[in-house]
Structures are given as structure tokens and as C-alpha cells.
Image (cartoon, rainbow, N blue to C red; front, side, top):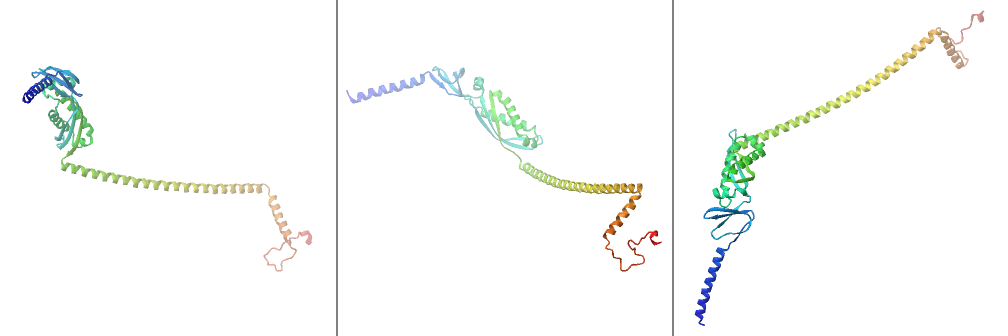
Length: 299
């Protein structure tokens, strides 16, 4: 067989095979819908059905559009707002959202063919931020940030529900006011810290003074108690001594012979200690022991 004729035959069959592969690929009825998506089947632009994840048969006259229902995020940078006390405020937000599965056909027909609503979410977020911040004063926006974030989330959910989207969460970033206001806040915080420091120092001094007063009062109370005890002992001793003297005086008053008996006892004690010698010199007024001789002896 002629070589040129053989090449012509091979070329002819190669072209036929290529056309068959193209037709087979174009007419192949099996398609697949990825996880986290929905398949929107259209005929001439009109929606004919919504398919879930997995394989499906698509006729040649039908078109399969992959529609995403997974969570997406839309970033809003430097959204501007104003507080109720006319302080300008700026913030960056990140909104995470997804398309409701039962709203796929509506969203596909009205807003997006692939589930991307980023532009709608950004516009709605800016509007909601302006509306929410207008309800708060600047100090409240700082002190009640979690409450502000919750209000933005609630308002954004209601607004995006119109577009068939559900809001998962909202994160606020780079929350800031004007430089003048931030400088004023910084100065106020510094003054507050100084005031608290002075109050704490004053409380410490007052506490130390109260402690010293308590110690002094305790010491004074202890000294008074000690003095009262000593005075009481002295009083009791004096009272006992006085009572003893009263008893002795009463006894002596009732029996005068006791005095004479005591005198005799004293003289006997002196006599027992006398050595029998008379004093060598006697003064006129000095007493001479045992010279008292009864009158009967001198007669």
C-alpha cells in the first residue's frame, strides 16, 4: 500500500476519533455538584431545578450552574459613623455569611449566579454600622463594645435576610475615634489613675493612723486596768488593817485588864534580860528599873 495513502487514512480516522471524543464529552449526561454547593439547572436561562451535592444527569439542552452555599466572608474597611454626642468613629468589620439553602433559586434569579453577595453585604454593613453607632455616646461605644457588636449583628441579620443570606458572626477591628478625642481619653485615663493612686495612698495613711490609735488605746486600757488592780489591792489591804485595828480596839475596850497584862509581860521581858547591874550615872529624869518598891517595904 502506498505510504501517502496510508497516512491519509490514518489522518481521516484520527479526525473522526477526535470529533467523536468532543461530541461524547459535550453530550455526556453525567455531572457532579461539589460539597457545600447546589446545582441550578437552567434551560435557556430559566431555572428548571435545584440539585444537591453528588452526581446527576444533565441533558444536552440543559445547563448546570454551581451555586455556593458555604460560609463566605466580606470585609468592610474603615466604615465611618458618628455617635449620639457627634463624635466621629471609624471601624473595620469582617462579616461571615452564607446563602440559605431554601433561597438558592431566589438569590440566583435576583442577585447572584454563584452565591457571592459580597457587595450587598458590604453596603448593608456600612448602613447598619452608621445606624447603631448613632444610638450610643462615644464612652458607651468604648465601654459597651460587646453590646454594640451584638446590636450590629442583630440589625445585619434582619437586613441581609432580604437577600436570602444568613449572618454567622461579625468581628469588629481597628475601632478608633479622632486623634483629638483619643488624646482626651488618654488624658482622662491618666488623671483617673492618678486620682485612684492618691485615694489608695490616703486610705493607707488613714489605716496606719487608725492602727496607731488602736494600739495607743489598747495600751492605755491595759495601764488603767493595771492601776485599777493595784489601787484595789491597796484599798483591800488598808481596809483589812483598819478592820483589824477596830477588832483590837473593841477587845481592849471590853477588857481593860488586858492592857495591864501586856504591861506586866513587857516588864517581865525586861527583867529577864537585865544583868543585875545598875547604871553608873542616872539623870534626874531618867527612869531607874525595879526601883518601884511598895510602901510597906519602906516603912
